[in-house]
Image (cartoon, rainbow, N blue to C red; front, side, top):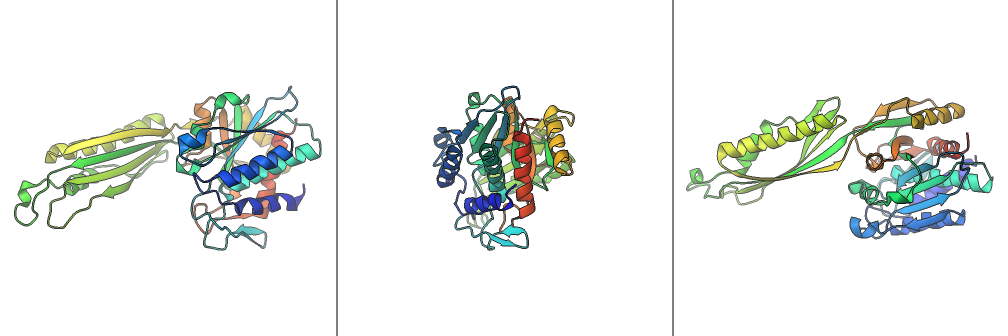
Length: 368
């Protein structure tokens, strides 16, 4: 393993801005790197659907047909602030200059996959058929994965390189996610002259919220209100309030029950104050649960054991492209790449984890 090569690639990658929906420059660089290694590379038309400036990147490398193909995936986009990133390596740790994210989420995964393929090709290492999906706009709703053309893949299983935790972390469970948007309409009135003639949408919404179960519901379920918006002059009883909430659960039935509890609270409050309620619900993605004795997890365990990496199999409270892959018939888990404190300017990754991620990717690609 050339310890400096994956680090060099990673440092170059993070300096190419690729905030969500603006991944074109980075997608072109990665696609070009893979073409130089002899892979067949394609880009789809997901840009239009995701309102982005480029599509998803697909790559294919033929291998020993007696082994199952395996899909390797990571996402191209970063959260802001992700422009003019200046990576700094100090004492075996890579971080930004402190005014941007680092971009290890998820360029650590991409760099590791590309590095492993480079070694496979340059050293002529026997390998399974390798398929690659680098997705756009993951951070704004898993959009790239939602608009992938799954008919292009032969793989029925995938590894998504996109989680915190040291290499050897395997996420085998992730929650489903639902979003609720609601508008409460009351009745405007002069707040000083005749407030009793009005119906305060804020009072109605506040009543509803006090009856909602929110934040940590149980070990599998959470709920949160992210938006509570009303705006107007102090001398007018407010007519309108808009709320936006989310519910997550590892259990599909709990997900539906918790969503219903929030809607029921809104309905009861509106009925009490004779206000109008309009709401929508949307399932962002479904939950998944891969048993610990599944062949995909056993393969990961074997590879980690051969490399001397301790294994931790655990659930997560967040979604990823793996949720969408599983819903489309590709059995998938997420693995840790060592990224830490993601989505903030304190984000970092150790060089050791970066190199270990590439080692694990290589081991997964090899014939075993």
